[in-house]
Image 1 (cartoon, rainbow, N blue to C red):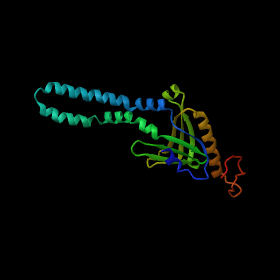
Image 2 (cartoon, helix red, strand yellow):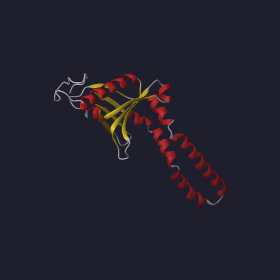
Image 3 (spheres, one colour):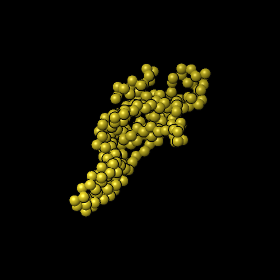
Image 4 (tube, rainbow, N blue to C red):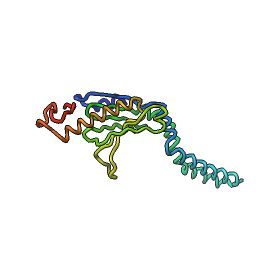
Length: 204
């Protein structure tokens, strides 16, 4: 995964930072996600109904032959939650972040692997987020919002989640985004190899 992600980086790019999420925080956030209480309530209701019907069915096995496959399908939200938890180690293995002087690269996925990239010139906001587990494990999330929107009109985001040196990465990305965005919005000297116009350190 790492080599595939790095193969997307062009020769004139320099890697400033690369890394993975904190493993403990990643697993805890996977287990205690918003779907967990919903899955627990759903399972209690379904297994309660199935148990009550099975207890009262007696010798009517034909009822159970119908109910068991029905509830197996009806419990899909529970299976999805459990599947996400059980496969989180694979998702963690496939998750990797790279920050260059021009863009952000992120890999992820479980069965279908994904490789995403977003140039700094197309980013509008860089934010820092620290949830409950981030604070417990002393990590943070760097959220990069694009100035482009998806089909629903929602700005696309890229999240570098649960990393130890979140402040350092946030400041580096923020500085690069400001320099690149300024270079695009205020070109000077007919865009030479080095920008002498707006006091930015970005070159290229």
